[in-house]
Image 1: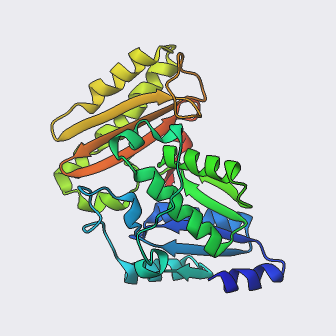
Image 2: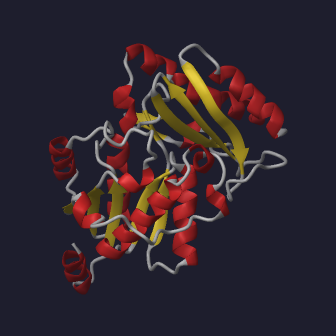
Amino acid sequence: MRAWSRAERAKGRRIGFVPTMGSLHEGHLRLVDRARDHADRVVLSVFVNPLQFGPQEDFERYPRSLADDRRLAAEREVDCLFVPETAAMHAAEPLVRVSPGPTAETLEGAARPGHFAGVLTVVAKLFHIVEPDLAVFGRKDYQQAVLVRQMVRDLDFPVEIDVAPTVRELDGLALSSRNAFLDPDQRRAALALSRALRAVEQAWRGGESNPVVLERRGMEVLRIPGVTPEYLAIVGEAVRPVKQADARAVVVIAARVGATRLIDNVVLGEGVAGDVAVGGRA
């Protein structure tokens, strides 16, 4: 993989990189499009990273569809599909891992202890292997994107990080590989996440800036049968609570729909309309 990237860069070509865990959907493919807009060659990786799953999480049942992934990557004209084996990425239990610091102590980090250390460790390894000039991540995993940017800045990785808007179905549901676990009733219930985000955004645009009031409004919408909320919070760029919600504040949300855990978010100043919908604008 590294030899391929170095050969391309020796020809003066800029390498764009989209790291994924596979089970590709249109959200991943929009990241490929974005990478192609800013690079000459696009690498897409497929690797279900065991380091970021806790002992009670869904590593074994995480959706895997490599044949479909290969077809979709080819249709999107990915230049290099990198599919490393687990034994190649982690020949032994890694003794050294990337410490994500205080930004990882809340929200997803609190709900999934050790998750972000696993994420940053594998992202660091992928950056060293692929050696991209640009890496594109989706904003749906907001806290992850913030942490990757911090790691790149603090450890002087020579890679530009681009964070792309969330891609949604026309009804508002954020695309996720885990959506495949939802049955039709759960799929309808899952719309409560995007409705809650819209409710908070609308209240903010109506003049409410108190985060406590806004969070309460979102929770009112989120609490429906079949949905178990985990958190709804309004945070700033450092993923910390804000005293007053402004256009830069981000509403982050996590909930379980049946046994499936989903996350979503929206930047208040952009709203859900600032995201991308499959087939058009949200």
